[in-house]
Image 1 (tube, one colour):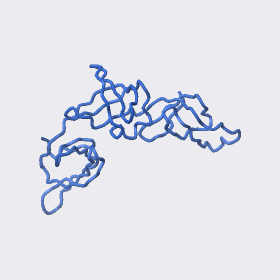
Image 2 (cartoon, rainbow, N blue to C red):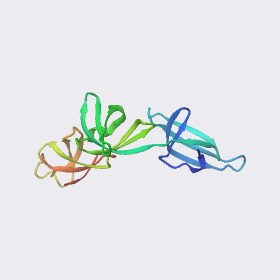
Image 3 (cartoon, helix red, strand yellow):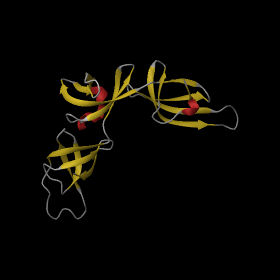
Image 4 (cartoon, one colour):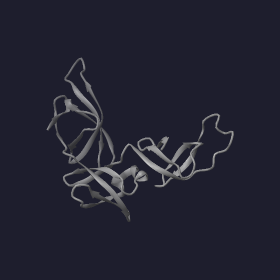
Length: 185
């Protein structure tokens, strides 16, 4: 059990038979009456966001999450097959649990799997990945004075805006959180 006074962004709690992640919280001490904590919670399974108010000092159950590093092996139907780096057990993860990170998954890439009571609840992709450019229009001479960008399709199918000097076959580093080009490797 944890007090709502100890809320931190990203903390996962068990509430109303579900897992909720704290997105925002605010301690409020009105001049009249008792203090309370106003919070915004996101359901880990469905993605639903709700606002909930707790009395100050109220206790909630803290969820115990297990984070394991696993290697992405291959895609089988709509499932992604991961291998535990310690036990070499294979685990099938549904496409919905991978989320938006699926457009950056490359075979043999290490990812963090979030487990709750042996059940997969999410996949954390590394914040930066290095991918090869497979298709981008050729750069045009004289079109670089403003430092513009052009779309580039990466080896995983993701589309990222890149500077004009990036060509087919280049390997670039991409920020997976914002879908932005960082630099050429």
